[in-house]
Length: 357
Image (cartoon, rainbow, N blue to C red; front, side, top):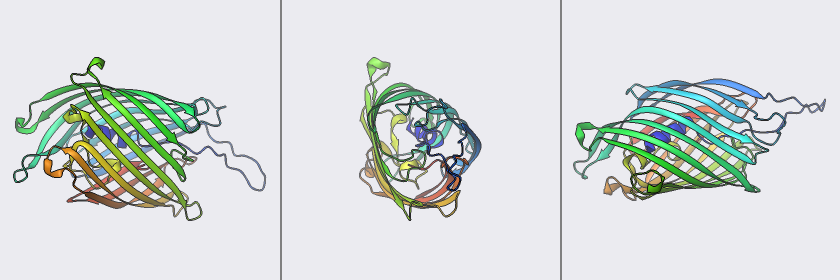
């Protein structure tokens, strides 16, 4: 479901890549050999108004699939486990592969969990939050091929199984199984996909849940993202901007709806605003005041359509906040951190694995 996809995406598959330059001694003109394997274990500690206190651990490894390949970024693999004090949990295995001189990119994800969450429903004067619990299993695998310079195209298959029970039977218990086939196109001129300082990324996806592909009803989703990066203060800092949109077409299930919050507009953690279409625009300044530490400031706006509550359609939803960053790997610019954000009558604290975008 979309709630879990956003959280797992937050935990597992935020945008990632690695710098390829070998360091060089300016006097001796000798190269320092980069390690083929980097290991780290990252703690996970966070809090929001929906899931409450969250804690867990994420062991990760960065490595070269082929030591002789000096062009491909390092690949990334990891295991994640998170438990929350509202008795939700998420566990998963995630992989991001770069190989054959970055002509090919691949992803592999297996995740499962129990989500105890809430949604907002009812007429304007009588609307309220209602609890629900979803048990989910998600498997996804994808491959991308470089078509021409900076352009990639690919396919992704995602299987998801959801069993959802609603408080006071306000909605009947449901079991939903989806098979999603995704066609994606990527334009990528970033100098580093783990920590970008210059360049652009345009990513467009069409996901079909067709009846002929084993789904009960036809549905389609289109997602589009545009990220742009500017080096600032003599290449020390970064100014980043992002537009994102998720557009649901056809019979979008409750679990497939988009929710305002997460990476695209921080400051919304209650799950109040959900619908078939969500769009967001945001900017972030990343100030690096030390070799392995930095701070960020961010702000943005979002809106939605096809909302469960008609009064929310087209509403302007601002969000913004600040965060701290720490470089997790010694040889790789890959940050972890903590963000605090305010939204409209809402707020959230976010533990970061990598940058928001």
